[in-house]
Image 1 (cartoon, rainbow, N blue to C red):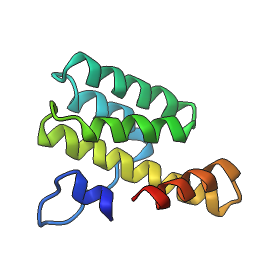
Image 2 (image 1 turned 60 degrees about the horizontal axis):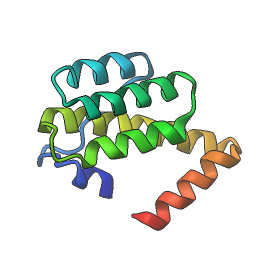
Image 3 (image 1 turned 90 degrees about the horizontal axis):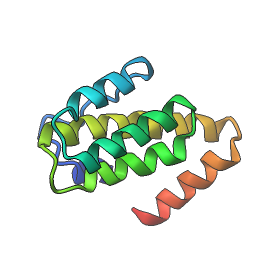
Image 4 (image 1 turned 90 degrees about the vertical axis):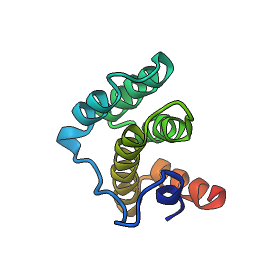
Length: 111
């Protein structure tokens, strides 16, 4: 998966996705000492995730991962969050969610 490589994962393979119940806690904990702009993206990701509004969550996580001023550990946790969001979007698309289908289609064009 292109996203995993972009996140700088080791040869050990992809990290496991975060779980629904730990998404907010893990992201906030990992980014405690992050720059203010990164913390704002975490807050945006958590807020939209808690509302089950996955497209903005996906966007915030992608922005976090692309930042040059975060640590490898922060990037890893953001990648784990991204994996969870991608799983949830795929599940929603399979159930007929038109928005999720559109997001997945857009992602497939931008990889």
